[in-house]
Amino acid sequence: MLINLLVVNPFLDNLLKVLSLVGLMTISAMSLIYLERKIAARFHMRLGPTRTGPAGLLQSVADALKLLGKEDIRPKSADPWSFELAPYFVFIPAFMMLVTVPFTLLLNVQMFTLGLLYLIAISSVSIVGWVMAGWGSDNRYALIGALRAAAQGISYELPLVLAVLCIAMLSQSLNLNVIIESQSTLPNILFQPFPLFLFFTAALAEMNRSPFDIPVGESEVVGGPFVEYSGIRWSMFFLAEYTTLLVMSILIVALFLGGWAWPFGENLGTFWQIMLTLLKTSFVIFIIFWTRVSIPRMRIDQLMNFCWKVLIPLAFLQIFFNGFILVLELPKILLSISSIGLLALLVVIVNKSIQNLNKEIVS
Amino acid sequence: MKGILRSMGVTFSAFLRKPVTRPYPDIHKKLPETGRAFPILLWDQSHTEPYCTGCHACERACPVECMSVIMKDNPNHINNGGTSKRKKIIDKFWIDYARCMRCNICVEACNFEAIAMNNTWSGHETSVYDRKDLIMDLPQLLAQHRSGNIDEWVTS
View 1 (cartoon, chains in turn yellow, red):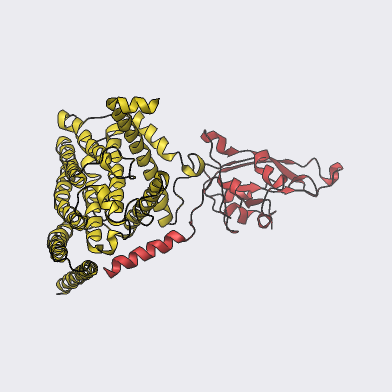
View 2 (view 1 turned 135 degrees about the horizontal axis):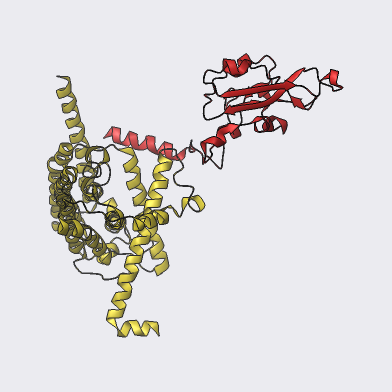
């Protein structure tokens, strides 16, 4: 009867979907925070949270309750409109990104034909929120952090889009489900390892995660745009951050690791498709946590140089090679060869620049 | 580039190792034998009285003056029909644990080996709500050794 009601009433159906998305967002953010603390602790050979609940499982719940109970303070000199609205500008895009994320073949909120375009467009809106937060706080650290976030976000948007473009060329579609279905025998990582690196790096920069956490670096700008925030508004920023982490990881899985399709094909049951997506996503998230604890923060000029002088030219080269190979219908193995070649070129360029830097320091 | 991969390897090997920390109030680290917490008085089991004769040696030696000692005639002395050879015995003894700096000088000064530094966790975990509760009297100072709840080397 419930199903009938849902089919008859599209509003109720959509309401239910939105509510379940909000639930998914909150629960995933809370569990990701717990997991990040636990995993980072193991990387530091510590224990992480242990006191709240069994093995510290309730730590995130306790933190959430604490944040809800805190006073929502606005500095006297802050601009009321932009200060109060900024968290929504960060939070709502993150929420909207979840709409078209491919969990399984059938179980999605809405599968757009131009899903990739939509995701890329929505993900860059949050920069507006960051700048609003920094500008509205009337705090120098916040403003510096916000402008750094804007510079970094806009710069790294380009490699992200170019990496996505490579995949779109390969599968001739912007629909995420079509892209995943095209990988049911061989995942894209085999053909496009360099765009995977591009996408991973750019996604880390987009999410302001280490080693690209310059805008929120505690030791430099004491937390960046949200210095002045507290309580529920501050937690909205973090909810958005961890939702973006989840969405980006699922995207990496969908674009490069074959989503729910590879290696078992499309005829798998919905439950197993969810399990496969979850497994791959947790693997990607683990790697993101791993890079966070391994690599120190980059300097802002190194960050910009790396993006504009290395990543973007090489990305254009990859697109050129892809177009060449696909139009002339050359064998697909050439795609892998060109991509691995570009990856090697990247390593050579970075090593060379480090050597030059060392020479400058010595002389 | 090679450095990045190596650093990833280092962190991953750390990930596979056992954590070096422990959930402290649940699991206690084994204390080193020479570690010292606050001083306690020792109990002579054979005569059922403290070793301490109240000679004030420790009180005079104490650099932070955290001790107060009062002595009395021993009712258990042989002349009074008892078993002990101690003519004088401790009557009242206070140590202010809030003041004590665990310097071990009282133990060095004692002629009767009647005082020792506690080497168990109960000597370290002495948090109270009121500072006055840290002034320990004679029964409290004797209690731990009297019940035998102490590591061996303290008494030697």
